[in-house]
Structure formats: C-alpha cells, structure tokens
View 1 (tube, rainbow, N blue to C red):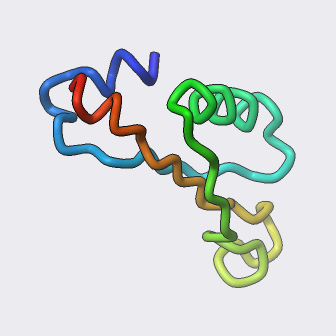
View 2: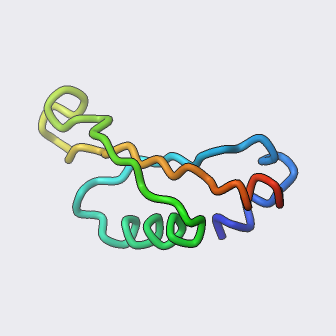
Length: 77
C-alpha cells in the first residue's frame, strides 16, 4: 500500500516517509520496518510527542519515525 501511494505522480518529490508510533504498537513497527527493508533503508527514530510534555501522562510518547527513501524509488516515481 505505501509503495503504491508513493508511486503516484503527486509524490514525485517525496524523499522520505514520516510517521509517529508509540513504543508498544507492534503492528505499526512491523509495517514500517518491512517497508524500510523493502526500500533498502533504515528507520530513524526519536521521541517526538512526549508523554510528559505533550500528553500530561495520559498517552504514551509518540516516536517520530523517518524512512529515507531509496534512490531507486525516487527515480521510479
């Protein structure tokens, strides 16, 4: 699905994919790790929306996950 979206002409200039994921969201981690592997890339991860600062301890920290897209995709798109 992600690959299909990124192949649309509207995404020609896209060089990375970003999302936020909580540490315990195993399904999302699996999806984005698989996509990064398919892109011959790696996940870059950093805390983004923190539990204490942004959510007043009511929601877990959301990590910003960035996947730099391979040159292969940039050329194909």
